[in-house]
Length: 336
Image 1: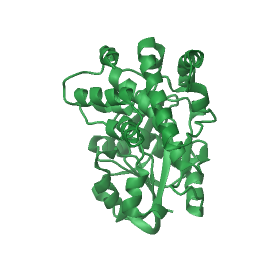
Image 2: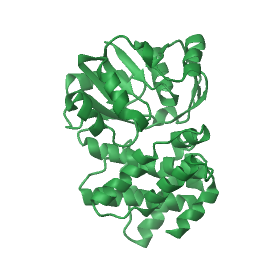
Image 3: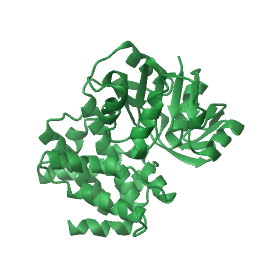
Image 4: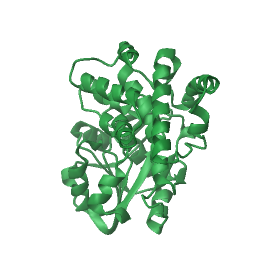
């Protein structure tokens, strides 16, 4: 079986290292030439919550010559149409693209390669690229998991094979309510990744400060309200019912929700959002695919999402050089 990871950045490098270490033959692709050269010369070095180095097969996209049975897509969504059209030419007749991107990318991908050749996978762990060939795992190993599925919720042999491969790294949950699963991950991303990028801090730092935690709570509430109006059932994350834990309709439940937020993110406290990593490198972010998706679903279902809208606005202003990631940006939310 021919397997590729397309977009071997922080997360893709960790996944590729784990799969290779556990006997899976996988090709890693990245546009980052210095990173590829580091991988070729020294192997993939995974630091942070673990520490190991493993030789990997690393290539530039233009070196992709073979066809693949399974491609794990881990690039940013900024140029998804062109990326997916390129990958379509390198799929076998029974090949699949399994997107591990943030947001809700599966619908757009399925329009290019077909629903039967599209899988989606939510990644419940984090990593930070620390150098050429070096990626830091920022989540506790016992907290890591994947949620895998197809848009139609069906299980087939190819999906089960993908599950088997990913289980070489950590537990995999097959999802029948795929959109509900995606929204559970989107909710976490919108709240913690969004505020991590706004404040220039880790998930733990954002949840520790009360002023930023208020924003996290409001963003989560907006996501839950949008899903409720759209009749989307948000699935539990790693066995935790996010709606039951963090939703509220009175003052008492709101206080409980507020107190639970740091506990919910405890094992991922060291995680720095990939959007913040992009901002620090002067790159565009995926905020339109994350908080922007919540805003769009809110507009479609006539649910106000002012906190998600404000995250989108602040991050775009940081991209334009008008702001820097800082807790000072919390002042903007007071205008809501």
